[in-house]
Image (cartoon, rainbow over all chains, first blue to last red):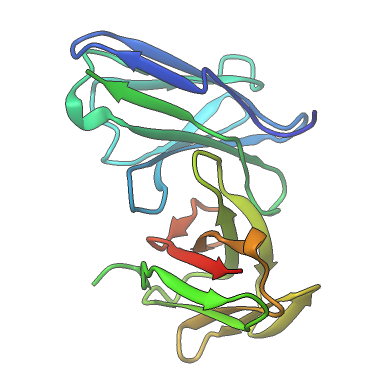
Length: 112
Length: 110
């Protein structure tokens, strides 16, 4: 399988807990993006990496959110002290050289 | 005004009909225009990608871009029940994040 892989597919947690999601991009794609999608809306940009460098962060990414891509391959997105409003689908996409972004199937986060 | 406007639908059409989906945008910096299809609980799947005004055809799908009017369209010919999904218009400036429309929910009636 050469597509973008995300894990877990679904995460249920209690409010106040920390959660971490993982994204494995398409091999050799140097750019990796995180988006958030709520019901009835299109995905909204959160942050992106070129190799291991985090180059842009949206104002949607509060201090409770942190993303890493330590070796320029997979990436993790962590949410600390989760809130009800964090319930959403978290999507990862990857690309190289001005090619269109390819998306994974997302991690659906449900906050109880 | 949002950067990208898209009617959320739902849009219901009979099988075999031609479907027309549209978006308008306000940011002149957008250079790349895409249409993604998204099934329930799945990620967006790239359907069409173009960076110039005019038409681009791929099988039953035609993407149309009019930069002077800031208007893009997707046409689906001979629509099938399997085309039932949410269609997201999307655009970006060079090497940049994608800005999506809200998505249009499409139902093809057998």
